[in-house]
Amino acid sequence: MEDGKNKTGDPMKMINAFFTRRPAKTLLDTIDDLFTRQPGRMSFHVHLSETESHYVVKAEVPGVSKEEIELALDKSVLTIRIKPGPDNSEGAKWEGAFRTIELPGNALTKDLRAMHQNGILTVRVPKRRKKKIPID
Image (cartoon, rainbow, N blue to C red; front, side):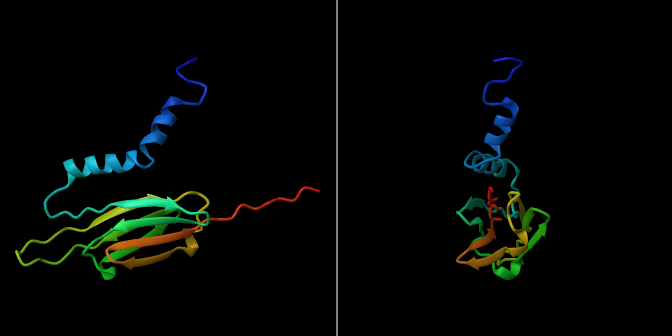
């Protein structure tokens, strides 16, 4: 080991990669929620997974109708926003919430599809296919 680096690469990049991927990111988000969530403020979990042909973003939004959800895309950043809710029977009103997800570079963001069912918002984003280059 020389200059603080090992054979596998830059240790700071390795640490950053660890804390920005699941399950460490989910754990850190949960800990953040414990200390930053305020009464009346909504919070929801978002999971990013992938299949061979798509990236799949799932947001757990129980009790939220599709009319209360806004999706926005800015380049490769998907924002899921929950609008503020109405007063409930006890006179309390909850604030809205949002999450942002940076999609990988090979995501075809112009072709994404969203569906809301049983308290789960699912956004499917196709992957750009790798172009095979023939060799003559």
